[in-house]
Image 1 (cartoon, helix red, strand yellow):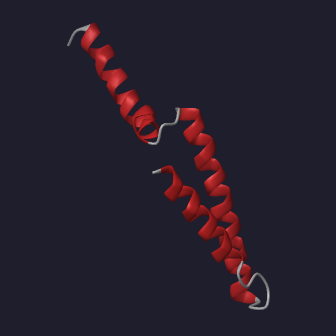
Image 2 (cartoon, helix red, strand yellow; image 1 turned 90 degrees about the vertical axis):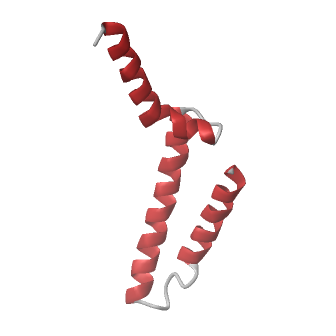
Length: 79
């Protein structure tokens, strides 16, 4: 395999792994990373609220569902 074709394969793999999906939602790699980290943060917070609610039902009665509804709206508005 020539150096040029190896470089092309590396570029295609890089694009497939890091660039193709963010482009489908009109984002750069770093813009997509920022959105995904923020999304993960709120999902984690919802999970903690749900766990606490499971132990003490009087606490965080609607917190997880409110967070998930808000995240769902954000996702739907992107597509």
